[in-house]
Amino acid sequence: MHVVSDTSPLSCLASIQRLDLIQQQFGVVHVPTSVAKEVMRHPSSRAQASLQHAFDLGTIVENKKADLEPLSLLLRRTLDQGESDAISLAVKCRSDLMLIDEREGRQIARSLGLRLTGTLGILIRAKFEGSLTSLEKAIHELHENFAFSLSPSLVETALREVGER
Image (cartoon, rainbow, N blue to C red; front, side):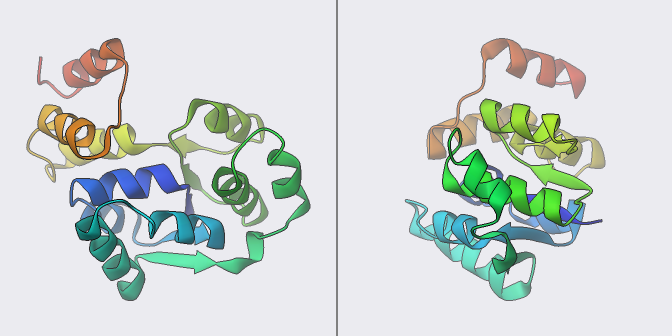
């Protein structure tokens, strides 16, 4: 399975020390250079160390081919560089899945025919697979450690889906 990621899912999982879920669920995740640089500017030194370890292990692989692709340059009119490059890489490599959280980026990626999941989807899958004991606790940690917020109705729906409500 070929998977490309934007910054947010990797940063979020690093914030709660759960990058292991990337390796468990996908094996390897590819990122463009701009995303590699963004994730390594994570505000937490602990998360940075976790991300560096994932790069060193080959769980996260930098792919330099997406930089300055015509699609990426076009997408930069609307999205930031990391999202633009990640979407461009996913399209170019015909990825099986793209990891992305931001609403506008998801809409554009979907319109280009990409199959998507995000941080919450990864956590839900981990809960179903038994790799995560509490989705509610993980969501709380994301909010506390990284100021990652989800709508209360989405959180309620997710918690009901995994049987925590």
